[in-house]
Length: 164
Image (tube, rainbow, N blue to C red; front, top):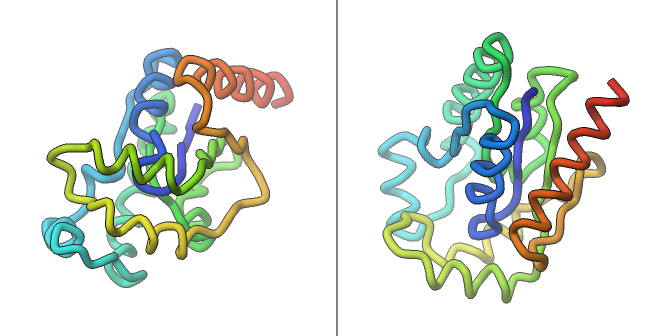
């Protein structure tokens, strides 16, 4: 099973994605780990990436997903803020999407509490400005407890798997 957990920075993609991967017994990948050094340096200086910066990264992630599908699946945490990016990552009809949504204020508080992460809280506005809300997949509120989010995500994935 292939699953992508999307949302703006600080929404909890890595937390939910890693727990989902554990429950599904598949590898977990954080898209942040696949950025080039140049992209990380740019974001560390407080500059958002543009589409040109993201293309090699998205293409590498798409290849990772294809390879993962052949070996049994994976969960990927990836902002995938634009529909164009999600189309690049939609490598299989079987891929499932979970989109994390929440109030900017809640996410801002979470980002301020993070240490040693290159994405600075000040860049949250650019993330929200870039976000294009999808019309598919599970839209999951981050206002609930992490265990409730996990249970809702698992129920969604089980339902999608049962429907084929």
